[in-house]
Image (cartoon, rainbow, N blue to C red; front, side, top):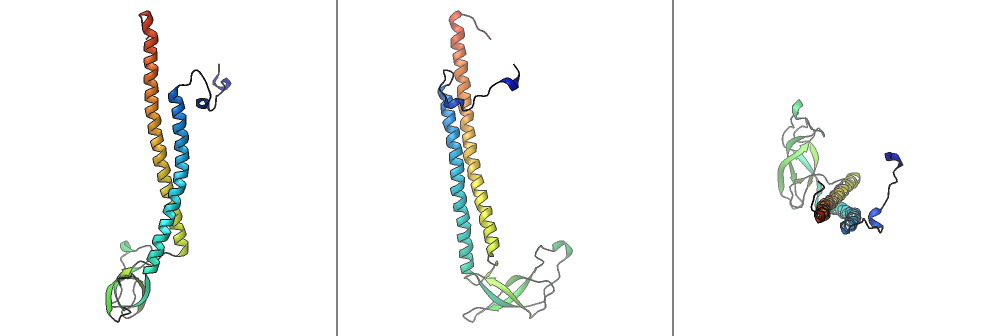
Length: 193
């Protein structure tokens, strides 16, 4: 009989049959629960991760403030091997805090900027130089990426665990078959294999 002529029995583990074993039913439930947990878990973990990214970005935005700083010395032109994607270089800047104190720190500025020129920098609540807060489009991109990665990781973990359980059930099923063949062979005193 050709393979194309064989009828495929779908969902055979859920149908009543004298050939169906208890391990087949357990495997069917494990697979079903694994897929449901993977989908639902990935959804909830992904949403929670996206919300955590948004909350973290909002907290960073609330703590940051933009200040105008003065370049202490000329910014150098970077060597060709040190050019970054944003084309900024590190230079020393000085700014005044709201309480009147003066702070000095390293910040990213345009190359070849002259000493005494004004640059905009971001500071955190302690007055240290901080990264610029995420824009709305960057925030959306980060939250989507974080949610997708966390959801995919969760789904992968659940499905991987389901696969391990299926392997253990398969090993048990093979041991049961071997024991049953052994029991069937021994009554007549000879072995078939």
